[in-house]
Length: 609
Image 1 (cartoon, rainbow, N blue to C red):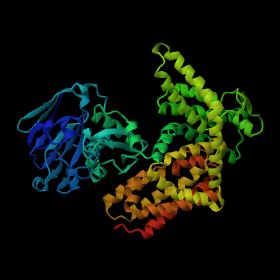
Image 2 (image 1 turned 30 degrees about the horizontal axis):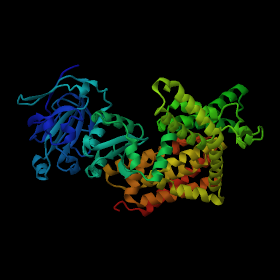
Image 3 (image 1 turned 90 degrees about the vertical axis):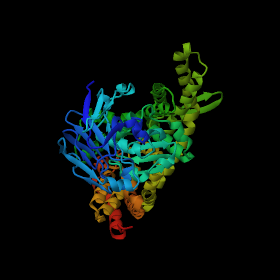
Image 4 (image 1 turned 180 degrees about the vertical axis):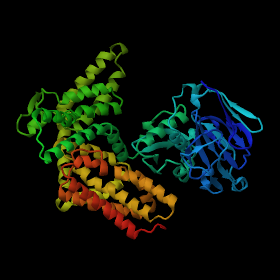
């Protein structure tokens, strides 16, 4: 690999990075490099390149040279807490810079007087791409950072933007040694720390790319946004060698029972949702075309039905696959087990419901048990998947390795099928029908009362972190009725959070804060409310409650209009595709949610609060 030489971007004494009094930098977790002790007060560009990351506090900057070197310059330790005080920025993110150009300046004496260590780490964040790295000072002194063995195997890093965010987060959570476990969801990086006192909430929120943070379900959850969270997560894995991606047992141990149930539902159903989203989009487009009077020929209609009906026809196979994977079983056994629940030899559940087929009865030791296929069922497949995973683990504990390949799968499928068809299936299907009927009746209460309650409380449940329990409900609604009334209710609650956050942004005079608030507001209109909730609305309290009022009003309208989507998983702007045959009603419900929350916040909330 190529050896590189970098001139020091600021005057002072070059020292080894290991001498820096910060565990993350000293251990090389953020990359290889050197540091400048006793720095002079100006940072210059050490090469021609671009500014990839510029912290708004001015204490750190990330550069990328024309030949691919990614360099993080971090002025002082913990200086982010100065919030820009005594720092002056002379460039901008995305700007091209020339070698020797002034980038930052800072008041050395004032910062030192405030008690901060001004030792400045110089870190090559993509050090895995290079061999020897040498830093050279103006007086000729140099520091050579050889290639550690573990870095030679590191994968290529992602963009320096994600790397800078990851480095900033790591700096303010107590370093790599303070992380017990780490994982992420669609929008948030989730951390369990050994010492919670080392988590600096204000400093974490000041890291570029971070839209907010909160503590829930025994985890520090840092909001980064869709897509970007994946990049930061991968960078965190690079920065903390040896950190496994997830220690779910540790996370579950500290959760309440309700949180554990919600988390289990989320882990099982979230992997299935993208397929059901796609199915719903196909169904919505077909519905729109038919509402416009378009008549499909028989073959085209059959193809469209394959697209929209397959996932629900074999839904138990999807559920048992995901459940087996979640609980440590063999996923392919879960697929086969789920397919057995909808085998063509069993009476089709939809045909039985329509009176076109009869329930099959089995005499088992004198006990007559009704047996039917479980097309569109969720709970029987979920419970059976858990049983099969536990059964497989138990069998593996004593079946000899020589026979394990044949005996364990055979006995797992045989025993699980018998338990599923004769016990779990009938019992759980009865419970499922009861719960579904009760929920459906609640959502259809007169005058939209059910929608008002759900719309008003949904985002409170999101804050609590137990909202994944609704995934099974939505899947059941779609599988049974072909429509999702729950989605229509919560879209108004989601857009209401965006409306309240936008009102706060509009009323905020500080340009920097307004820009930050606007960036946290936009995801709400794409169906992701965490940045708006934790970055703005909950912080000021009143906007959050005004948004709940907006969600309740929108939910009531959705209930009164009996609005329902053709799919799940997407809301607000993307969710439009689920309502192509009821666009006016959908726009009206979202307008009510947005307008109510925006108006209440705009007229009743004062920014100085």
